[in-house]
Length: 413
Figure 1 (cartoon, rainbow, N blue to C red):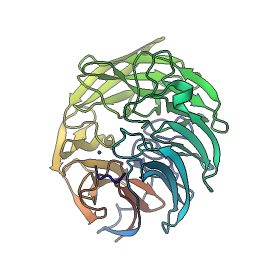
Figure 2: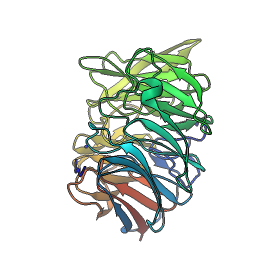
Figure 3: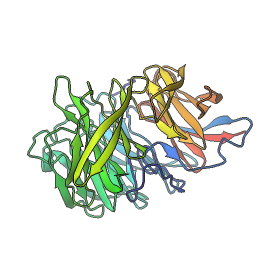
Figure 4: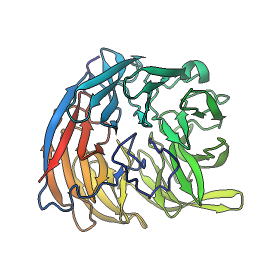
């Protein structure tokens, strides 16, 4: 199928605002699952910034994010109506291995979506046909498989899209089960695929990805659930990462939509619910055994899109429709907006790396509430191809992809 269209990993549960010192980008949205890199000296000290395309690799389809660890770039691609996990050498783009994952789900119009989770020795990959696999990261050798359709009656209309995460030594994945008697979220032994816990709840959670976080001093796994509509309404279910027990579940009363985006942690025990319509900052409070969310602000200047906004020094940077916006995290007040016609953002060394969803352009923009300040721009991917995965950054290189190509960029001055 030739198409041109539309983790979250932590080795342990970490405080959402604490940045890792690691150089890898081991799953969706990087080492701390919030789109931020701890790298320094990449952009800030340079009077000018240049970007150079080092290598690219082409394929037919796919919207999965790019994971990078130990010098290997791993993602999922579609080729002739089949899903594949592929690893390339990070420096040269040489293909290291390729593993077929099964047929592309017939209603997954853009190829596989799930971003691989890397834990050093293994790559955990979920194809659109809902078979979860653990692969040897060095060779691609299959270690174990789990068919979510057989085990949990997964029947997502658009195929499996959730990205697995590693939390507290367990692999956590949303099952995409439809029947309420089946678990929505499961934790597995990463070495064997055997179940550690399974959690059932009434709300559906088919396409978003789980997020490891700490709120009110309590480690938890957050899930963006959807209450059946019409229209479906998005909320948050929080699970104990050790047992899978439901800690709390809330759907904001003002919510009018849902999305496929995971909840976003804002610090100070605040969490955001991102929908296709808006961004709602919620204060999470714990009184004894009782949890509740109270809305702080809501804005349509940020919405769920390809990836969530990034948080830097008290401001959020992300997309709401065609505009890249800078929004004060405490109040929702807009500092500036700049029309870039949609895309995704990560944060590296105090700068935004912005990937257009359609033009193939990569920009480096200073992360400041003062004004939109662009420091570099390079057309990288074919114009018109869809870029429905956020950028990645590891070991001094940027990695971007569209539904036709993955590319590595070096940074100079």
